[in-house]
Image (cartoon, rainbow, N blue to C red; front, side):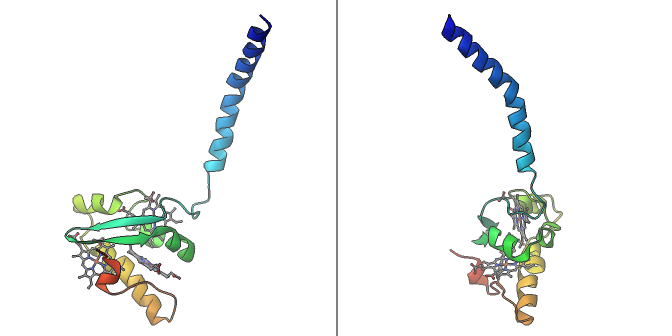
Length: 124
Ligand code: HEC
Ligand code: HEC
Ligand code: HEC
């Protein structure tokens, strides 16, 4: 009888605090737009060419901006393939206009940069 009452009280307490807990979690999840997100390392498919291991978090941290890349494709897994499939994005456009363009500009400016040769990006 007594234990029934106590567990009843605990149950009622849980039922009433659970929504508050969810609200707290939501507010913790609302991070600023430029905080590090997604997987640390992505594998970018390149058709018959070997895939490209892409250090996503390194770029997020170094560039401190999302839209230098995500103006070409949304922040979702497989976004590049999706747009290529719909014919909205040319194959190799991201590679040439985004990856290589930035690496080349930075190298010419004498800044820290990334690979420019095929096999440094397309790794078997
Ligand atoms: C240097 C380029 C670049 C920058 C800068 C960049 N991303 Fe990405 N991001 C990518 C690429 C490439 C993909 C993979 C798209 C695909 O799979 O087709 C991706 C995928 C994602 C994904 C989905 C995959 C996953 O890991 O969950 C999220 C979420 C994401 N980016 C968030 C961000 C946020 C937030 C920022 C800024 C803090 C950012 N990105 C900055 C290139 C970049
Ligand atoms: C900085 C990294 C990087 C370098 C350097 C690079 N690639 Fe790529 N490549 C990519 C990425 C990422 C993709 C996938 C996105 C796209 O198609 O734009 C890709 C896609 C491709 C594709 C498209 C295959 C398909 O059918 O979808 C080919 C072919 C290719 N690369 C060949 C090359 C050759 C040849 C070189 C050297 C002259 C080279 N890549 C240098 C990153 C790179
Ligand atoms: C706006 C500029 C910018 C864009 C766009 C960009 N990168 Fe980079 N990338 C960098 C910089 C800066 C570094 C050097 C970071 C460091 O080590 O300080 C780098 C380094 C790298 C490295 C070497 C990482 C290491 O561990 O040394 C790889 C691989 C790479 N990038 C691939 C890519 C691919 C693939 C894309 C396109 C999806 C891309 N990058 C787009 C700026 C860019």
